[in-house]
Image (cartoon, rainbow, N blue to C red; front, side):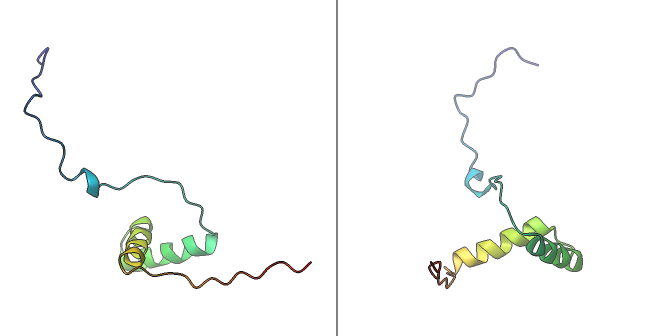
Amino acid sequence: MRENYDFSKAKKYPYAKLLKKPITIRLNEETVAYFKQLAAESDIPYQTLINLYLRDCASSKKRLKLAWKPDAA
């Protein structure tokens, strides 16, 4: 192993933007069970399935139709 290395001609990793970012997300048990069942059927990890679904929603700009009702006083 060398004592010093020359990184003056080094380039940034071009695929860094494509890497996944670890986050914490809280999902209800039914949602996780659903994706785990799909994972077992398709032989794809459930976290990958969730990521693919969310990426599809983001790329097609899907929006939830939420209608919040005020609490009755």
